[in-house]
Length: 201
Image (cartoon, rainbow, N blue to C red):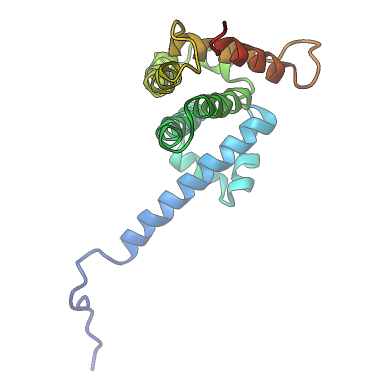
């Protein structure tokens, strides 16, 4: 007697391997994003593909299947981290004091900017993949930070005459490597900048 190939009762058609394949693909994409984030921090955005795939535990073919061009991977990593920054703003607003939340979020943004060696050159390389991307990402970050700034200002713990866009721009500039600068130079400058955000007098 031949064994029936009819799907088990209650199991929808297509609930087998195709669904598992989609889950595997999502896990691979997530692993590649995490690995790329680490590799970019260690070696810059031009890091060899094999360094990324070794960290992710997948083959190079899997990388190119998900992200055919390096610009695809860079954009995906940036968007993923921007999404995390936006989520962090909401979490900090509900779980920390106004000043502490503001400082913690700026610290997170500082880390994000400071671990993207070669990113500025890539974004200004003329590659169509990056056209409008800096402004697009900034538009997502501005409301997240502005909420934290407004909350701190309302509590008397931050100046009310500085915009989120100004703060983001200043942090991005201060996070850039300085030729001949001592270790921790950028962090010191950002700490001074944060002191300047406090209400004085």
